[in-house]
Length: 104
Image (cartoon, rainbow, N blue to C red):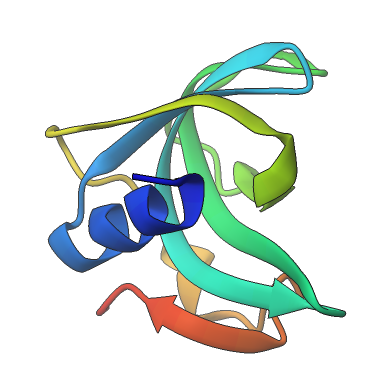
């Protein structure tokens, strides 16, 4: 399965994604998948792993990540707790053409 299909499946089944993005191992729950300016992107809530700012606090409302699919490596799906933040309903600008979005 390609990266797009893996993330689509994870959204539909509310599964976690693990991946490497720009050299950092990340544990995330995808919330929206589609395109922005013709490029495939997804909106994730990162609950574990690291980012350029260091270790991730799984309870922070600042863990939203807008990531380009082309830059994701070693993408894996796994079962586990679904993570999100209370500010999920706020308007997002990551994906302007949404193909799949998690049901709230």
